[in-house]
Amino acid sequence: MNTYLQSVIDHVKEKYKNEPEFVQTVEEVFTSIDPVVEAHPEYEKVDLLNRMVEPERMFTFRVVWIDDNGKVHTNTGYRCQFNGAIGPYKGGLRFHPSVYPGIIHFLGFEQTFKNSLTGLPIGGAKGGSDFNPAGRSDAEIMRFCQSFMTALYRYIGPDVDVPAGDIGVGGREIGYLYGQYRRIKGVWENGVLTGKGMSYGGSLVRPEATGYGAIYYLEEVLKHEGETIQGKTIAVSGFGNVAWGICKKAAQIGAKVVTLSGPDGYIYDKDGVSTEEKINYLLEMRASNRNRVEDYAKKFGVPFFKGEKPWGVKVDIVMPAATQNDVDMAQAKKIVENGVKYYIEVANMPTTNDALNFLRAQKGVIVAPSKAVNAGGVGVSALEMAQNSDRMIWTEEQVDAELHRMMKNIHDSSAAAAAEYGLGYDLVAGANIAGFKKVATAMLEQGIF
Image 1: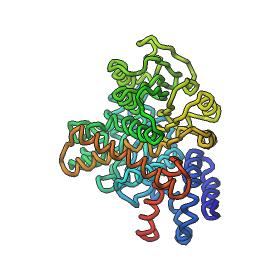
Image 2: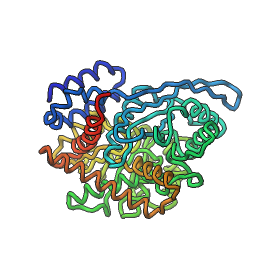
Image 3: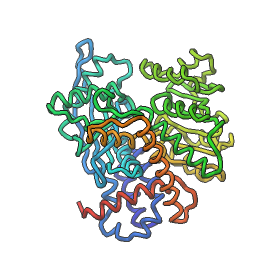
Image 4: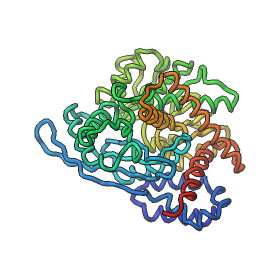
């Protein structure tokens, strides 16, 4: 490995040793770009890589709110504006008890390269809070969102930083956040948030975009291998918006999702999550705030496996779509033993580094990275920004066509980047290289700061 590149990785490991998610994703991305760094000695002259792993700015703020019983609660809020070299900062807000600075650093760094891959002018950011919305009333969530935005509003804007939703932040939360932003600013800057409702500047296809985009990317991989998606079986984790979009699009084009999972375990539906009733029930499950996939098993009479993950099920395609580090080495070995050919990451960093390296080393297994596969969500968010700027609403067909084109381009540019550096059809390395090169070029051209 290039000595400068290795020194940066070692520096990150030492400085951020208490943030394992951030260290893991930096190591994964930077290991892939070794041939690029070797070919560009000018990176070291301007210390580009050390600049790239440090966020441009990180805000931490107190969020105080009152529950329905009058009790006062205090949470911590975060916004990390990681890299704005190619456009205004863009990335989701996550409300979950696991949120801490390391999660925000990791997600902001990853978002920078994902946004670069879309080909759209958007930089990388991430934010959120350790607030847990599960079990809270609508009124409590509204009061929390209002307090959160009261602290956040001064750091964001349509040409500065445009947050979106993530885990724990859906259309309801975006609505409360935007209402408070408008209340404070007294202006109609609906381009300041994406994932909005259609009544105030949202985009068609946005709720489905990440799942739809993942399937469109998968189709390009299958096409490269001379196969089609029709008749394929898919194991998916999670049951939120992303899993819902995957199930919906897969059913439309003749594939079959046979697993869903939650914190309580997973279900196996041999007939597939393929009917309108089953697919719509995923929305009910999410809205219930129960966070239990067993509800699906009870409603449709399918097996439920308490406390287990779905990676031992024999399928054609595996698509982890829930959360980070969902697939470890033991799970990866099960996937290989079952003869799975296509491992398509959808959630952010769903695979531990050792498991990812193991899967990539298996002959006949094709691995696609999350930063490429799930980029359709942020891509359609950027299209929402464009619609807000033009005071227009595009048709579903227009948005879907742009999403489909975007995912094809992401696949093709990743494959081309890998081939350029003699790496064959390595989609993980290719995505890292393609995303990195655009950001690196922009940083070089804008000088040292």
